[in-house]
Image (cartoon, rainbow over the protein chains, first blue to last red):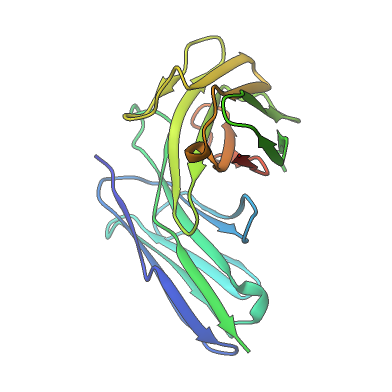
Length: 113
Length: 116
């Protein structure tokens, strides 16, 4: 059974600082997704990572995927208050095992000014 | 980008009544729609998966007679919460996907259900 673990679950950081959120998963997969959720809102797609070594960047966020280590990271550079949200990673099951995404528990990020 | 519209965004209903939530894929045909429930500060809990034209597959512990799902077309799925009780109050989110497309799943805006 595919399990997805995120850490940390809660992250309080100062503006201007850097930090990384980790997403580990338990079985082979070559597809990983990062989503953002603001309070009271639904999920917004941030990144789609489709191969080993994939790296995507958007503004102060950069996501990478290492399929051999079964690890994805979401790196935050010089955090700003607007990045405060909950971040989820989600992993696709291997081909042939359906199309449900398996979500991590989420990381609540609070950026303090 | 692909758009999924979920309606209503908020609903308040009385105990014992039923509530229907709609989920529409506006610019693509979704072969699969997923229904989630989310409690405060928690992750998404998958309730059921529905494929167009077939019965929904419910996750363990989800009462199929209470949470009726219909996926009548490639662009519309509905979740009906029957005989709602206060413990059904929650944030319900749908998502839609085209098969196992590499774009992943697209999410509706969510519905905040409050049962009084």
